[in-house]
Length: 452
Image 1: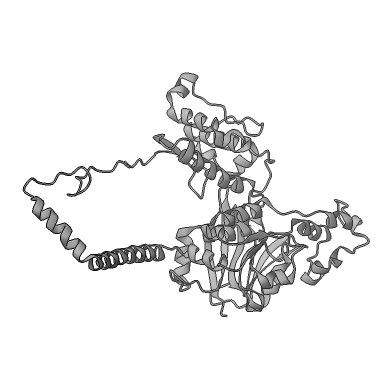
Image 2: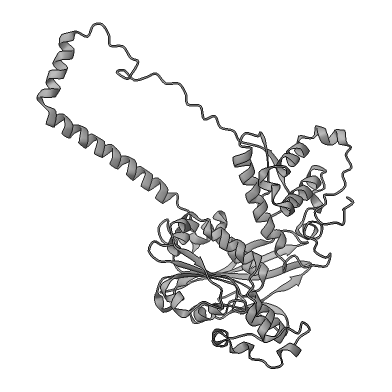
């Protein structure tokens, strides 16, 4: 076993001596990355990278998992639940982005690069695929600059050609214009067809949400509301949430161990880092760059915002009561039982082989959480809505990751009849599993097409 330094961010003690380390170019590459501009202001990401790279180089990859990273890099207690605390997963996404930026911009020609494949945290040291960009030499076409006319061409012939052109100027100009227009048309059509057929299923979905001419509002979860519900052991319905009447409790300060008051809840607005990471990922999409996109706290959102915008809601009803506006059109209802502290998904119309309810659970050391990704028309049929729901943080993350997974989402899109230019409305029930603190795996349990 490796001796782990108990202070956060410290890499394990190496069993190699300094000369061995100096001879290992992987250590040299790791230190070059850590000393780069990309990591200069990201101390915790640098600690993250150093921790996993050191273990990988010393061939101790079995000790690289979410639980150990949370303990030794992010100062979590040994008893913390990785499925409920997404700090490692969210920071791993940022670490992958920083590595890509470093090797693309700061070290574009280094022969060895570091990647962290999705689905785990074990770094891979691999050769960069270098492609020569030097164009092959080609002889210049006859008549271009630098070419010499053969001496056999007589002055009379050259003069004759000039006379012919000047005698029929309109004919030549018309022909040249027609050929140029035809070439341009072919080029544009080819470019359009190639890009049209190469559109991924995710691109089609994002194009529906970030459509031209209609602004988009993204509404993350209200984690202060979650704290309130945990304090009172009761859910807050949408009407009470909108009016603020749910905080009118004279004995709230005595209802839980934290003794938070109604004034405290009214003054605090929180959301999770997982939700913020999703907002950033959405904002970096190509389709979003040409759209008008804004974020809005769930507590200050209004019905008119949902009517005039395309809407993205994050979190189950317990964390984002606005989801309740769509419940009459959804088959999968994500909720949370505060008395038993258990998340669940209600399957209102189970098909053969499906359960009527899916509870969060742990079986033989494997934790099961559930998420729902729903794409449906906006309220009153105006615009489009996209819902990322989960029975907990891990479930919401599974829904958040699903449309960004090109392989899995494309396979799902084929099942529901999507094409390269059209995406039907749908809701997908997702299950995420995590074993021993490693990164979760996500798969689709079932889905429903949502009719207009």
